[in-house]
Image (cartoon, rainbow, N blue to C red; front, side):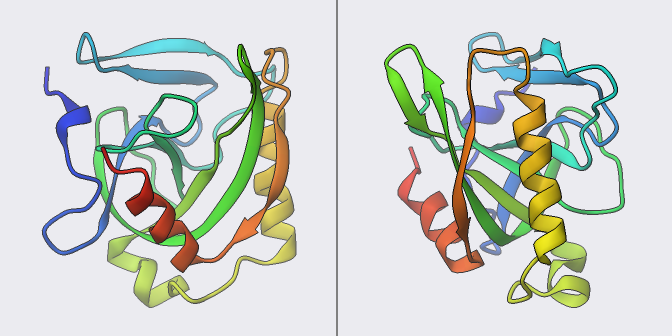
Length: 170
């Protein structure tokens, strides 16, 4: 299988690349195993909870938690594990969580597809307070019954999101 971890975070047009791990509607958290170059089942989400949008990672990055930078792509479609989505940054949700060494930062980059991110939503459009609250609640609910004890720290704009990705390049 293809080694997604070797890809660049940005394509030749400067768009953010997101590898889908768990598609919209999935109640299973899939995780890319870069040692075996395959997608594996990480765990089930809490009963009744599903991914509201495609969830994945930005290749060629390394976050403070040791994994590639987490990302979610807000769109109406449903992809499947292994799809590479060309995206634009919309926002950065700063989250921290418990790890074996204490609390660690684990932000989520909020993306929109490149094919409509600039036309329908625009990269300079803010998410509504309601949309932000729902996204926050999903991320907190997704860690139920784990030892992560996730906490929301705050929101940042699309420029901060892009700068964050650049700062985490491998």
